Length: 64
Image 1: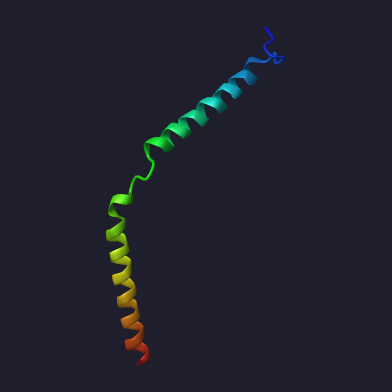
Image 2 (image 1 turned 45 degrees about the vertical axis):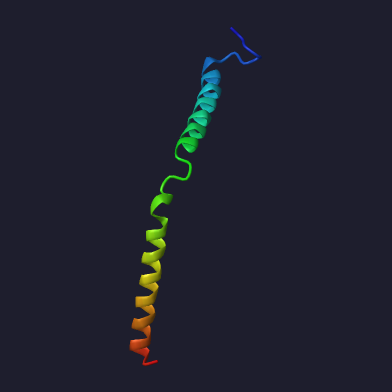
C-alpha cells in the first residue's frame, strides 16, 4: 500500500513519531511554563549575600 508516494511503512512510522514527539514537547513546555520562579527572590538574595561575603574576603586579603 502506497500512501502519498511513500511505500515503506517504516518511513511513515518515522514521520508519525516525529509529529508525536513534537506535540509531546509542546505540551510539556506549556505545562511547565515559568515553573521554578517561585523561589527566584530567595536565589537573588542568596547571590547578593554571597557576593558581599566574597568582596569582604577580597578586601581582607588584599588589605583595602
